[in-house]
Amino acid sequence: AFFAIGHPLIKPAVWIGEVLHTAPGPLVGLLPLGFVLGNLAVLALLATQPKVRLAAPVVSAALLVNFVGGGLEGSVSSSDYNLALDDGVKGCPAYEQVRQPSMDGFDITKYDGRWYEHAFHDWTQFSEVYDTTFDIELSGGGTRWLDDFGVKGPSPRSAPASWDKSPVANGAHYFLTATYDPKTPGVVQESGFGATFPNYIVDVQKGAGGEYTEALQFQCLQRGGVRIFEGINYLTRSPDISPAQLAAMHERARVAGIAPYGANPTDTHTVEFAPSRSFAVDNDWQSFWSALGVDKLLALLETSTHTAFERGE
Image 1 (cartoon, rainbow, N blue to C red):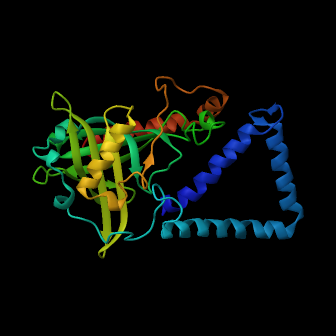
Image 2: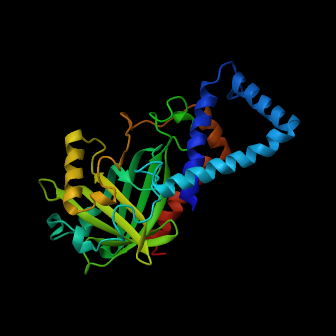
Image 3: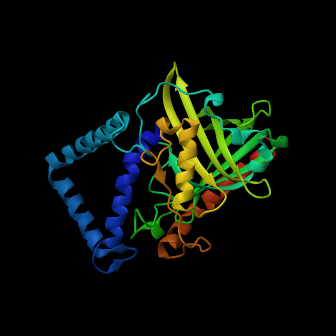
């Protein structure tokens, strides 16, 4: 429910950020005078016009319902907001139906470390973010896993005027935990977003030393035989990927049989990666968020989650 509602809230929030940081006039503190005057005009309109004041929440609610309804129809975005049930194909496949020969002899310990997500089909992710990483930490001899899902947002492409003023311009993290049974290699039972679901590692590619350099992940969840969620991740060990490399991953997804579930160029979102990743965003807005303690809260969440995982909690 959070993500179904989150998309129609984040998109206007990003738009408001662009309006804020492109508004004319001198700064009044951190806010352009034009933005301050515009907000005062809107507040005055709401205060003096009862019909407008009554209509505003009704129109907002109608737009929200329309957006969610479009997601249920699959007409908003086929990559990051397709809420349609059983669209195209019915239910979820078994792992054996999508598992590729590259998974023979799969070694979960080689999956440890940082992965960069270059494309996804997943309505629990947002197309406005960038520099998306999965940091996999294994413990218990590879039977437990912590996925540190890191993002920054909004991206410079989606919000060219406001991306560096965001409270998560330097990153935010969400954590998913999982168990792994070596008797079912390639299948991770992952927990996050209020549910436990199978995360299929469908395909891996190896480097010269046998290390895993690319991976395709596929999550599918059904209730009563009806598919209610599918997620697909295109992962590599490098933040850089060529069009030919991404096309080859799409082809391997097609061969695996997961293209009808969204693993194809039309139904995936390509993740943006910033050209320079070594710097921290530092400006007056970041100082403002820091004064509010946002950075400390994000750091506390990250540290406490890793500590609890290491303790086996």
